[in-house]
Image (cartoon, rainbow, N blue to C red; front, side):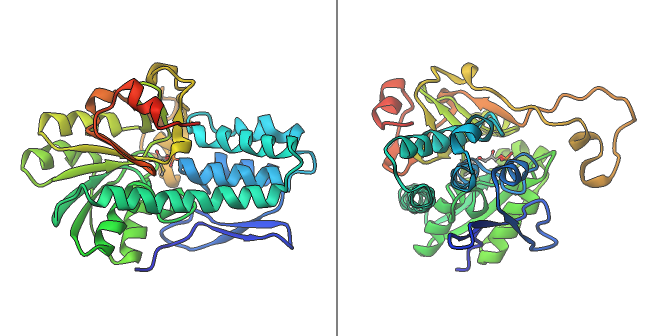
Amino acid sequence: MEIVRPFRVDSAARRVEILDQTRLPGEQVWITLKDPAQIIEAIQSLRVRGAPAIGVAGAYAMWLADDPLGWAARIAAARPTAVNLSWAVDRMLRCISRGGDLFAEADAIREEDEAACHAIGRYGAALLGQTSSVLTHCNAGSLATAGYGTALGVIYAAVEGGKSIAVIACETRPLLQGARLTAYELQHAGVDVTLIADSVTASLMASGRVDAVVVGADRIARNGDVANKIGTYAVALAARAHDVPFYVAAPRSTFDLNCPNGAAIPIEERSAAEVTEGFGVRTAPEGVCVYSPAFDITPAALVTSLIVDTGVIPAVEAEIVAAIGGS
Ligand code: MRU
């Protein structure tokens, strides 16, 4: 199975290369990043995106900074919702205070994330039937992590383990991470994938053609509420209405035990242009008012299980989530 990889790092040349996700699926363009300002720009423009991947990018930004203490707050604030970014910056700050090697620490964050994805994959694959149709929203794949993916890690592990998995990928308006990235990386890996417009989700479940939903997360609060790509909550509501299990796959670095519940999670708002003239085509009148949150909150009660790198948490309860020991 050929799984795309989002990062290339050259410590001697002091540079990080990322596969520019704004150019996919049409072009595979690697861009070179040599300082924290370039990495912040890449994070904010979604050249690199997905909670664990921006954590890894943020860690490398700290390594590349001449003055990492001076840059830390700006790097951590590049995008507000995924806690992995501030988690990684905090970890780099702790490394500085003990006089550690910043490159080694950033590389460890990348390697640990990839290992966590494989563990999530193993735990999650066991939850899927031998022949399953699995719906996912946004992109929680190799491109969104250090490699392999969280939600798609579950798919990859199931397929590698011999299960017959058909993936249904929601296109994920407005920036089409499902159409552009999930469909791309699953095709690349040779996994069966069918793309749907987001609005098809509920009727597809009603027709009995979805066996499970697996999505990723940007931040999970202490009570188990989940922030993920806008539209995830609607998928969870439809899943509950049709008795379809709804799984959330995420590493421990996505848990924020300082956040009591989803209402405390900051939700990023994106520019109006991403809705009115996405990808350069104007689809709304000039001057129209736009509201474009990038994420929403799925209440813990709608989550069947959390699939974490330490195991599966069957029922989402504050005590259980706290017990896994998040960031
Ligand atoms: O705005 P994006 O593309 O960074 O949003 C990404 C998501 O919502 C993912 O589902 C989430 O970060 C999990 S990635 C393993």
